[in-house]
Image 1 (cartoon, rainbow over the protein chains, first blue to last red):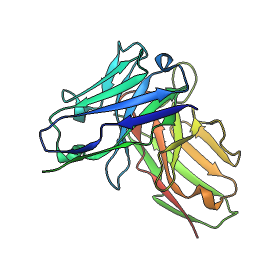
Image 2: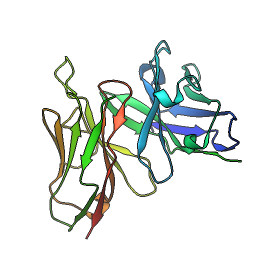
Image 3: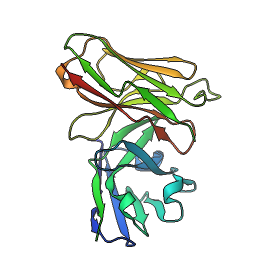
Image 4: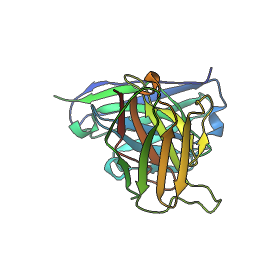
Length: 117
Length: 112
């Protein structure tokens, strides 16, 4: 079964850091661009970052540039999001998402990150 | 950034009746390969979003044929030929032509 499973969510203090992981299974992970998309409570979807198959290209939404880092380990079939200098505005469910033929075809169940003191 | 504007915000529909959601992009989404990089997603209550339509009009695997997507310049439409109870949720359009990838604000479909 094709699957993405996020982990690493939780409660973090403002200014703190958190690392999200996404374990991929059921497909050839190294062949796909991967993305992180987030959704603040009761709000819409916001694309956060993506990474090319070999990790050579990484792109970010302006609001997280310089604070978040996307990475991947193709040997471990894993995607990561290192989040630093977190603020309340980063509170959201973070989804790991696969890109295929122009569409985000596989989504994880999401990991909740709450930034609060 | 490309701005995606959806309408309506809320859409009450009687089961068996058709429904239509519009999405307008602030710039052309036409790639040099001839495809519009416009997708439609449905987020059912309590679930992760799911892909319905990609490249403007191609139904994703397993999506019922009552869902269809159409394109006209920077105007895109998702149509449901006969709404069923399982279609409730929030529908989003998304442009994937350039980063930052951007979503519409969502359209909430509810059953009358």
